[in-house]
Length: 280
Image: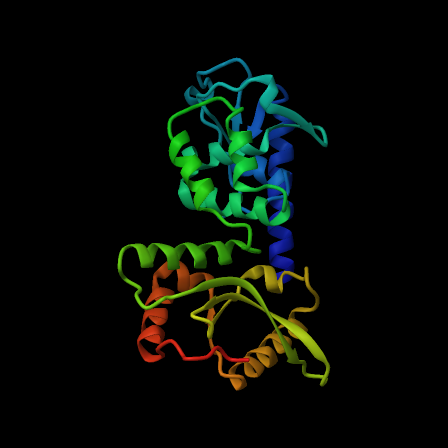
């Protein structure tokens, strides 16, 4: 089975799970990662349980009878925070993101926030903070608001979010030094494998010449074309960039989550000082 079919099958399983839970719990509101998925956002982890909140009830009654496919959260939610989305009762975008933060952690929430900001270009920090001010407050709301301010609108995939976050965190704790500039989604004109002029988009560009390419599943999911064609095109583009003086670092999901990525990047920064001029 190809990676394209595996991803498609997994997404179908997620939607079937959410649909099954929604039918069995018609009064409950879907929130957290499952709600974010219904709203078209990327998530850090696959959906294996559906987070639910009961309107007008701050206590969870499902804890005495645990379910394998759902978890009832002890939190208040108003009808103003609930909408009907293709027949599902789903929490608002801001509420889904906040519940993802407090129940599933910082990384899960950051992936969803940046996915939302990539898909909806009008969803600025100011706009998302404004929407957050209208949801029911809870523990962690200030930290969640800080995460919104930390987020960007230039990450196309969850892996790009992880790459950006890893770089910034490593800079903050002193692991990475020598980074003078960070740019995202930088376009260059190159010659493709057929001899035609085309644009190459670099996911992250450090110091004007270290090009970081996130090899995430989104690039081989079939969304952008045939997987083999995409791979050949990516390799040709890499050679074109290298021939023009760029240092290219390809990064996988495992590289980032294992910490290998930061170690590789640290060595590159030590090997290649900032050039006097940026490659053309």
